[in-house]
Length: 65
Image 1 (cartoon, helix red, strand yellow):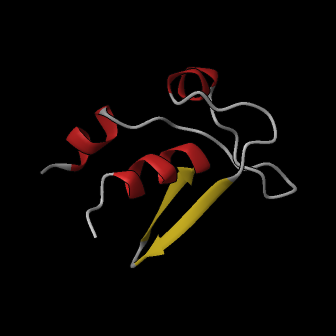
Image 2: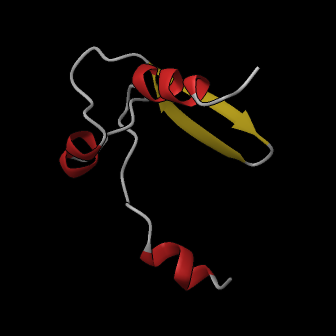
């Protein structure tokens, strides 16, 4: 996969002077994120993944024990 293909599907954002990451409105709406939602950051190698509480609940519901 070429870097340009990855960038075409990415959303550029910024980190402010206090270390906060701005999540664009379209992403917040798509994932039903609202003020004060808890988000969890999973660190893996050189990447990090952000999960909402709702997303994690749905993920674990689909895991069979």
